[in-house]
Length: 139
Image 1 (spheres, helix red, strand yellow):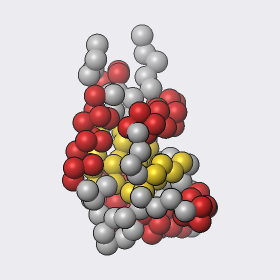
Image 2 (cartoon, one colour):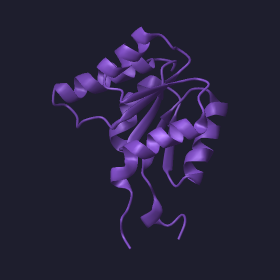
Image 3 (cartoon, helix red, strand yellow):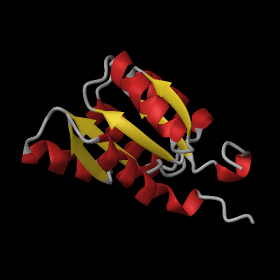
Image 4 (cartoon, helix red, strand yellow):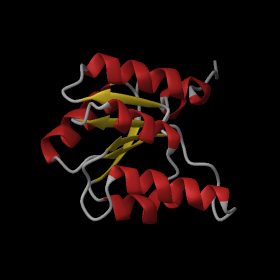
């Protein structure tokens, strides 16, 4: 049955400060069977990630207070120092398209980077590839 707990594909944390993009992505993810939490501020992402406990994060680089690179760095440092569990897979979305931004995001732990404007199907495909392990196999 669609919408039942057995069909939830995972919990996605959307870290996006543009309310229109955040709402659009939230609706698409819910329609695809994901639970979604939206946070519009980088420092709030860092403060709440443990309690939100997402299976994946979609992270905009242009967040206020602490940008996406800062979020990646804090999460990586926290894990490496033993203060937290490993961060979830992180897909970065950004208008920045330089190779150096892609390399920096990867070095800081991002598993993938999509350039805005991205095709929603590409993002949903990337999310599905990274959350396959949390799809319920209950019959």
